[in-house]
Length: 311
Image: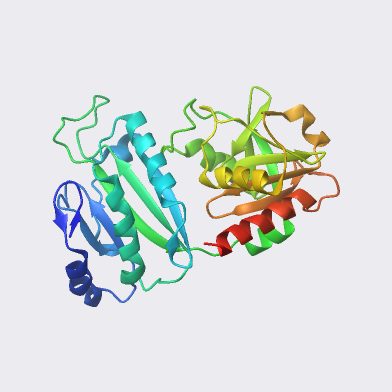
């Protein structure tokens, strides 16, 4: 039996009840005004009210977790980050620890056991009138969870990607994983139009992070990355890479990189839950060194793969 925070869901019964209803095997979880008890349903049967504050105001936060060979990677850290985002925007979603079992059940319901997938988890302040004032305490926050199989970014990891730099026009709480991602959407599409795969934000002359990645640079064997503050997301993969730097003996300097000094660095790479470690070989049309993935980046890619293999 699984407590959703509002009622109890028996996941075994849900599986037996719902499997005949869909051939697509695309089950999601929803708890909202329309589904106050919390239900696992085929995606096509889930409804989100147009009066949801996520729709009106992007009043919500999200989290993304992934699996390796069917096992959720760094689950506790992802859920702690989700909880911190919720706390920062004052959305009360109880029983955060129950999200993990729901995600694991999705692997069975969607026939994804043993595969690499990512879980998208989103919470909004719920359904209420269009007012900037918070809704009454009794309004149920909307919680939505889905699962999607990962297509490994093999080409990006092997060959590297191109990037452009763009002005960081986002709000000043980038450490909150908020659903209001319009600046990132615009920047990412600006990159696409320029023939690049990522956009790197620049705030006050300093490189902060990518649209969906954390940024690293290497100079003379030293790894640089922006320090944790309100201008970047505390990436889980970023944390793992810093741990691996320590493990293999690489010096790390958590220091913001000046845009004007970009050409001085030997290597650039980005990290994220789905990208893992991906080299950046061209920025604004200019090659980073010889335009090929660097030695330190390759060492960290190998260390990351070894870390995953160890389980």
